[in-house]
Image 1 (cartoon, rainbow, N blue to C red):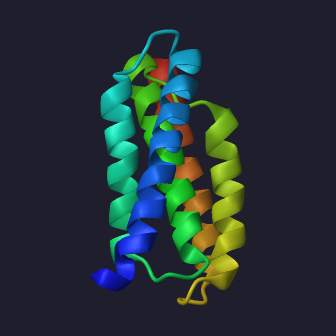
Image 2 (image 1 turned 180 degrees about the vertical axis):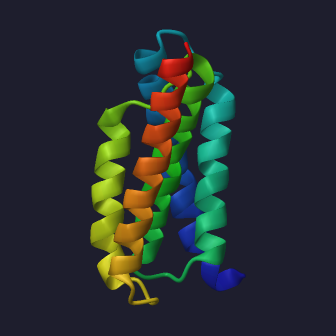
Length: 132
């Protein structure tokens, strides 16, 4: 645990700023404020969890950015029932690029997963609009 103390403190400190940014983003996108303190606490929690479970290599900052981006998306979804393309589309592209360096060595599988996820969610949206 002691070898993780400095990274936990650094990531936790960064989590304060990331939580603040996620709350501001959600407030701007949803038009109403999220619970700022809870958002900051969640971002710090994401940071501490990531440091404790991820190896201390390039995957740690990627995991932190993904976790904090998903926190912002979650807030917008809870407040406004939508996911803004401003965050979701770069996450798809970034995830596919990062998959090239993942230990499983299966970027094609990740691409197929991304396409499948898009098709399923598009089909749900299409059916929902038709039903309405």
